[in-house]
Image (cartoon, rainbow, N blue to C red; front, side):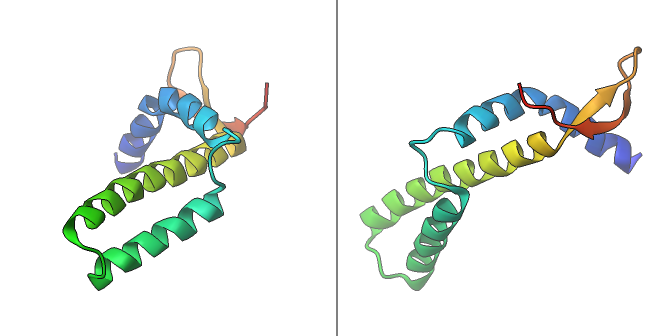
Length: 101
């Protein structure tokens, strides 16, 4: 039952994967590694209490954007690695390697 719920979540996320791939392949966005490093710096600064309140709010917002970008890049990488194969009745049958367009 637990495996079925996880698979259902994956299937409902399929439209998000296309968006993630577009976002993750935008050359104007930092790489995953750059975004993660910037996010780690923001977390350190927020946890240390170095920033005043207004700056902390801005850092938090930037951190949320970086987190979303990192997640999009991870989702895009996963989508490139595998895609779900559906049986004729629409039920999940397994996975196959992702084929780029």
